[in-house]
Length: 156
Image (cartoon, rainbow, N blue to C red; front, side, top):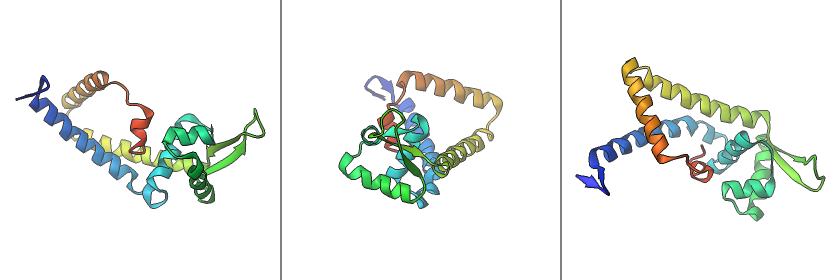
């Protein structure tokens, strides 16, 4: 059977693989969600990748309403995850950046995710691992890079 010209078996295999990967993502972030909410974790991930950002730009990047986003940042400051600081370019401009604790939380989640993936991969032979590398490289190239907005939905 074909769906839009693509073999059904390839579609189903890709869906199974995506569910397996999403399971790893969910397990890797679960402990962090005991400390921060998923929207707060998204903020930490964005700051981890971009560095300090203006409040408005950060709100736009995570798809938050600027007027209510300030309260989210207030809670994150109180929790010790981020800091507000004056911009070196303009004293009127406030930047939000990660604290060491915020950076460490993102690193812990990423490390947990890497370990879980490595655990799965080490159960395979080197030939099977190479097949996965080839298949995922091919799929990633065909799919293209996801937008930051796509990744933020899951806190990646």
